[in-house]
Length: 317
Image 1 (cartoon, rainbow, N blue to C red):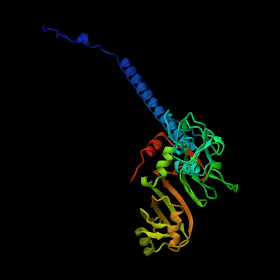
Image 2: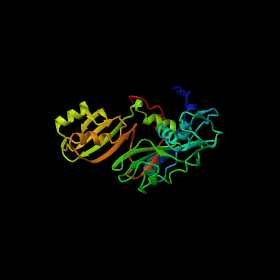
Image 3: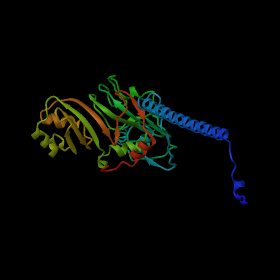
Image 4: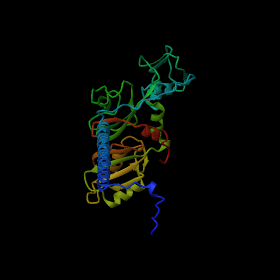
């Protein structure tokens, strides 16, 4: 008689009917289908989120829905030079403030002061052209893609359009342009009430880079190209560009110029010296800032990163 085979492991397994096995397969398929649907819904949501973010960034770039990057200034309770105080008040850049003081347009506690280095404090009554000056507490930084036919000044006695007319509603703080672009030059222009930064970006020793797209009345000849690159002598001294290149190999009326000089109308004067008329001049880069995604005549606030980069912007960068 055969001995019945033992199954010591039978208690660890449960035999299932065919119907139960089929039902288990169905449940697993439903589970997999549900997980797949949830995965693709998540991907769709991420895509919609990225699209919305890109649209918002483009709107901000056009100056239509941007929020300012405000920076609180730590007020020094000690003394500072008068022209520095005026710069911090947002009235003018530091060098311009010095000229305002020298002209006798500033009073400190009722007395006219003509020395830019005269020490003052926040408690002094300082008036510029009769208006009381206060140190700006919130620092504002605005990038404008300047159009033609606008004067780069805070005020024009002849009543012409100024760049401040474009950004007038951007901020309640009093800001001013950093450097200048002449009336017929377009492109990147920075505004701020940060006097220290404005001084840094306009001081010749920091060699802040600017890049211009130049359109000439005729093709730039190779020998003239080499002469400009080696440096020319203008009425106010030698002038040399850092980089010179044809913007379009097939159209040599289009030229790219990189330069760090801040002398008045320097790019136009270099080409006029060589016998060319500048038909169009557009600044495409200033201190690392570009007009990308900012239409002509539009503005935007700088980002936190851009402000940090500007504050660390130094010679050779």
